[in-house]
Image 1 (cartoon, rainbow, N blue to C red):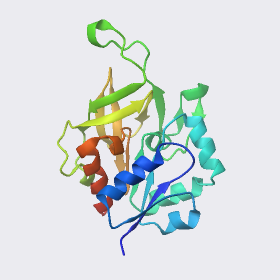
Image 2 (cartoon, rainbow, N blue to C red):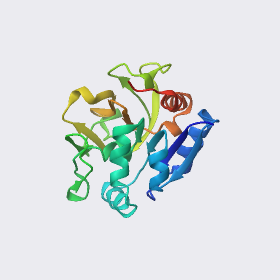
Image 3 (cartoon, rainbow, N blue to C red):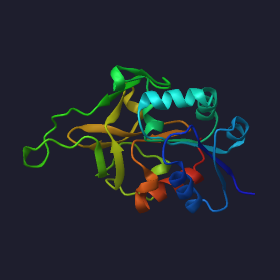
Image 4 (cartoon, one colour):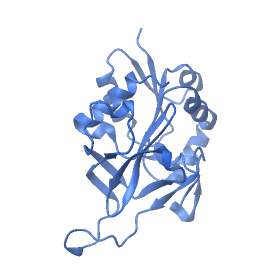
Length: 214
């Protein structure tokens, strides 16, 4: 019997594309998009995807009564946050004139400046949408087989700014250098979308499925 992998369903984000990508790299696993507390607790691994507005995300987590399940999963088993699943780990977002987040790690979520110069001195487009290089800032099992500087797919207008720099697992340049992945213990979270990032993204998901945190 393969392992159980829960993809948290709180009504936001393209959850099927995430679950399909995980099923592709883990054909023997039982992958379920779910908000069932018992199944999440029984799962061997948990993936927390998401996109959209921070306030809507926090409201949806509360409505699905997933706050405790998210925190317990982060403490007890391999946990992967994707996009909004990274941002909500901070304390506070600048979005909507201020939104309180889960506060797992000290830090905030900041909007990209509107006037960052790009090619021909034209402002860079916000949201940051498309393929960008990811520079690995610490060795980690989830980077195994992924060349430093590989390109991943992003869609976001905000980026995390953790206070603890030892969390930083990767950075990306888009007008400024921002944190694109963090890692601590059994938790790994990324700003990009591995499920949309071709071979490098599938390799990261496969690494997550096989990851045995110490």
